[in-house]
Length: 519
Image 1 (cartoon, rainbow, N blue to C red):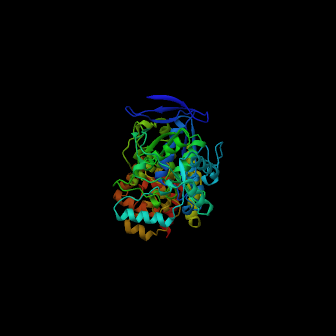
Image 2: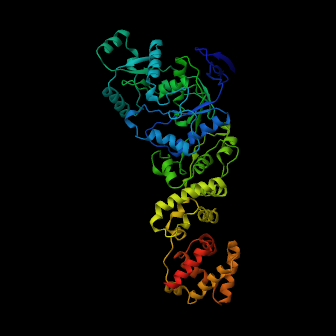
Image 3: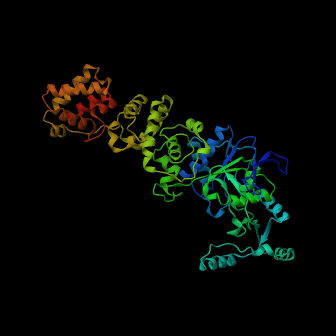
């Protein structure tokens, strides 16, 4: 059943949904526009689970031409990590999903940091106290700890016994006058109205039967998550809340808070947990899931977005290689399942290989890759590079085009196995003779081949010419390959010899072969 209502403040219209057979349901907003928020706590840096939540909010907003908001929930003052707040927004920008409104970007509904909005939480708490939906609690930490230990001894889940709920006004005033610092607790109502989650469907949690009244405002004036998220979602005009399913049960408290404040709540969509392939919990602070760490390893942002969406649901198809614009187009919130998303990080290299190849094939993106690789080469091999031709755009471009489809990360080209591309190796004629007594003849024949021109048009043609050299010298083709590989790279394995030669270029091949003969 649906019924139209108006909020007390005369703001936007809303819709009530009722579960068949239920006496009443929960009213949610009928938004004028989609306004969603990613609300991390800067108690740590952005990880893959957080990136997935941010991405789904971003996709939902962009698909509806709405607004994506970054709100920092920094009320847990003891656990704040210096630099985390800026780093979170930095990583969202790097990933290509920047917020439309944030502390950095501004907006009409700021501040976007909870510690700068304390007056709003204080006002809401005062309103709840005035209407009797909240009360002062004077219980000490020692008493609360005793309650917890007693519950654990008896095998029950710890919960507050709501003792201060029953204080008279006289008792409350006496304690306030004596200077006892109180917290504010919300008076949970018995029973629970069902609400329709956009992922989990009709849901009902009777929190008052299993939990004590929650603290909503601490003695230091800072709110807890429950009050802060409700107040901020209201004042920021949030239309939909897409967050992790660990908050699904808490939604019952939040809906009671909305009702007590006479505000209409947003629609809720709780995203299934992201787990390791074995079903264990994904660590939020382990280095292998931190976005900054993955970036430093050479992972591309589009690879991470592709991976986290591929691991979960919410799309009509599931394939590797989707770009952000394709994710926006294909996203369908009704296709998100309640099953946990299994994240297999072992597949990340494959995702990165696909997206790196796509970047190399894109003219503009390839220029950016060339610039990045050049800077990395100067930092890693700068003092060892004797011929700075290897830093020229045309040389780096040639290397990337020949290696595309093989590289999982740009950083691989900085490894020792690829050092021959940037640094001339020192190989003696004696080392070449160890591979073949005809090493000098092989080198001379290749130098002559280069001088004739035309052979460096493709790896296929170059391989044919090298086979002809082996035939003319009456030596094994494998011996020719070993001599050339050693002379050009000082290594026993790597890309094909023909690719090595094309990467280095005609002049450099001749220089290296000649130097090897002279040593």
